[in-house]
Image (cartoon, rainbow, N blue to C red):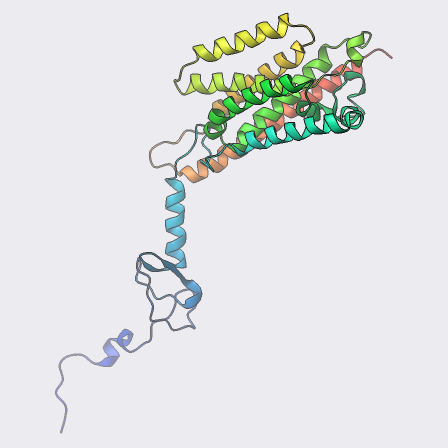
Amino acid sequence: MERPSYGYSAEDHPEQQASPVCPRHPDRVSYVRCKRCDRPACPDCQRPTSVGVLCVDCEREISKQQAASRPRNAMGGGMGRGKPVVTYTVMGLCVLAYLGQMAVPAIVYGLGLFVPGYALVMPWTFLTAGFLHGGIMHLLLNMYALYIVGQYLEPTMGHARFAGVYFASLLGGHTAVYLIADPMSQAWYSGTLGASGGVFGLFAAMFVVNRRLGGQTAQILVLIGLNLVITFTVPNISWQGHLGGLVVGGALTAALFALRPQAGPGADRQALAKRSALLHAAVIVAMVLLCVVLIIIKTLTIPS
C-alpha cells in the first residue's frame, strides 16, 4: 500500500536533515547558536556574555561599536584611568631624588645636575635635573603646583600627551638655559635644577586647553604673570628655564589641538583616535628634535 504524498519530501528540504555546523569551522557540528545572528558556533567560537552566547564575529563587531562610541578626552584620545598617574609618578620620583640628595649629595648632584658646560658629555641631565631641587621649600612649591595642575590637565589631555608636554617642557627649559648661557661667563659652569620648567610648560598648556574648550583663562594668565614676576625679581632663579618651558609647553599644546582630527557625523571615532595618537606622537618627537637641533647649532658656534 502506497503512502499518501503531501507535496514535499526530505530531498526538497535537505537543511532539515543536515546537522548545523560552525561557519568558521565547517567540520564541527554545533547546536549552540549565537544570540545575535543565530548562526551555529562551535566551542572555540563561542563567547559567553550576560545576554547569552555570542559568536566570535558578533563579539568583535559589538566591541568595535562600543569602542567607536566610547567617550574621548579633549585631545581625541581615550579617557583612560581617572587618576593622574603620570603626575603622581613624577612627584614620587622628585621626592625620591630629594632623599637621594640628602643621603648622597655628591653622587646625585654630580650625575643629575644640569650644567651647560658639561651638558654635552652628560646629555641625560637635560631631564634628570628636573627631578632635583635646591631645598625643601623649592620641592614643596613645585610639587604643589604640579599636583594642582596635573589633577585637571592630565585627565583632560590623556596620560601620554600630558607626559609628552611635561617632559618636552623640561627639555625646552634646559635647552633655553644652554642657548642663552655665555660660554665665556660663569653661567656656563653654573648648575640648574628643579621641575619649574616642566611646571611652567603645564601652565601654558592649561591656558591653551581652557581657551580652546571655552573655559576661564583670566586666572591662569594671572598665575603665569605672578610666577614670571617672581622669576625675574627673585635672585638665583633660572628665568631662562622658566621661559623656555613656558614657550615649549604652550607651542606644543597648541600644535596638538591644531592637528586633532575632527569627528563628523558617522565618523569612525576609533580610527580617528588612532590617527590622532600618531599625529600627536609625531608632533612631540618633532619638538624634541627641534630642541636637539638648536643645541647642536649653539654647540657649533661656541668659540674654540
